[in-house]
Structure formats: structure tokens, C-alpha cells
Length: 102
Image 1 (cartoon, rainbow, N blue to C red):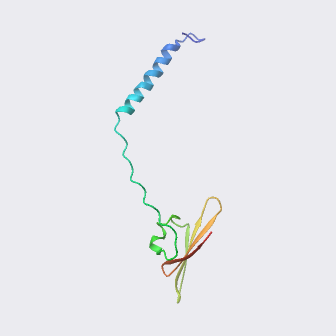
Image 2 (image 1 turned 90 degrees about the vertical axis):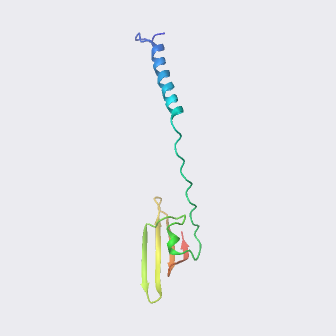
Image 3 (image 1 turned 60 degrees about the vertical axis):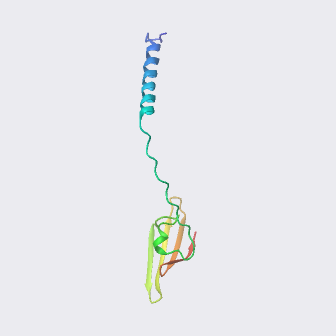
């Protein structure tokens, strides 16, 4: 079987088939890829969450942290900006989550 230029199509198909067969053989004989351990579950946001666990929350690391220190203690506002223009906030007082907003 030949194409319009006189090339042997069966030879071309044979090369492709041999290449695919070799790839299949390599994949068959290769050792299995190691499986990754499952990711630890993220910490749900809840009132009283310690600031140390804030970054391990489902919200992740904030884009910015605003801190206000005074005689009343330490207040932190964690700002989360998304690529879609949404902004979320976590509010900590003296090391514990007091509220959040979307």
C-alpha cells in the first residue's frame, strides 16, 4: 500500500506500531511510582483557634497581617486576597481567633 508520493504506508505504520509497542513495554517493566502520603486535613476555622494554627487552617497563609499593639493587648487582622477580587479576613485578639468576615 502506497500513498500519492510513492511512500510505503505499511512501513510507516510498522514503525509507529513498533514505537508504541516499545513504549508499552517500557511502561510495563518500569517500577511503580511511589505513592505520596495523604495531605493532612486542614484545620477548620473556629472561634478560639490559636494563632499558631491559623496558617494550618483551610484558609492557608494570609496575603498580609496587620498588627495593632496597645494596653489592650495584641490585635491581628489577617487579610486573604484571592485572584478573583474577593477578600477574606481573620481577626485574632491576644493569640486567639475572635471572628472572621468575607
